[in-house]
Amino acid sequence: MKIGVIPAVISVVCLRKLGVHHGMRLFITGERFDGNDAVRYGLAHRAVPAAALTDAVQAEIEAICLGGPNAVTEAKKLVRAIPELSVEEAFKVASEWSLRLFRSEEGAEGMRAFREKRKPNWVTK
Image 1 (cartoon, rainbow, N blue to C red):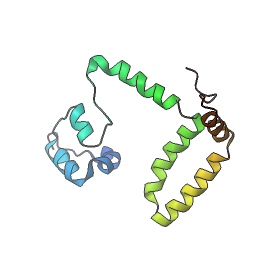
Image 2: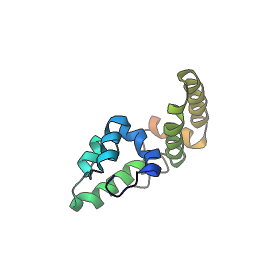
Image 3: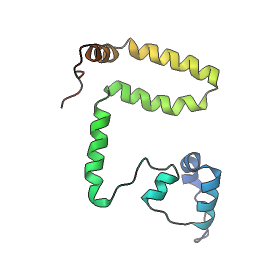
């Protein structure tokens, strides 16, 4: 690489998203890339102009806040856990996870709010 070292530590998290194809090229060339490329490589969800960044971040925050706080936390865990399991084990774990959340107080409130066509109690706006 350009400075005689390799991106070893960052590779642990980046290569899973980049894949071997993009990772090989970027790691060998040390090429810099912009936000649009980061989206194309799977490292970012979207790219926005600098002037729109604050509004874009606020929109993401507001979208996340529509979900139940526990459900948001559990969804993050789910997304990290399921891909590491076999399909059979993933269905077992996902079924247990789903049942646990549907039976939770937050899940019950969410379902009531849906039936009653209102926002759940965790939504403040």
